[in-house]
Length: 137
Figure 1 (cartoon, one colour):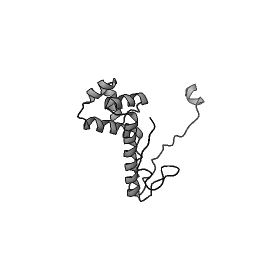
Figure 2: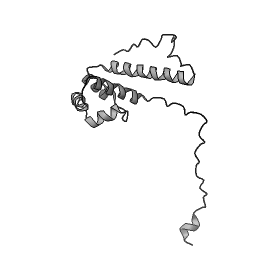
Figure 3: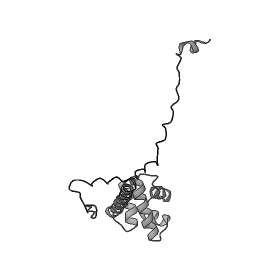
């Protein structure tokens, strides 16, 4: 027996077991903001019939990075989002409002499918409160 082997305490390793799967369908994953914003940028670009390269060049960002942002793989800075929005002829506020509208739609659909009512948007939110989006630029 070596000195190293005798000085080390015996440790019993217990492997972690996965949690049992819950009964019924898996709960829907909450959408990530980067997925929503990326989707808005992609759909706006495609609606304009523009290529990824065209928009990336106009925004002065790399084409691979813009692709990653559109696919929700990268969390873009506000400067990158503003540049991409401007390259598409939109303001940052317009892009964010479109993403917010998508989030509202997804949340409403999720509430209907789970049978749980949606949460109010905030103080004073009630029926119709989500119909108007006001953003300060």
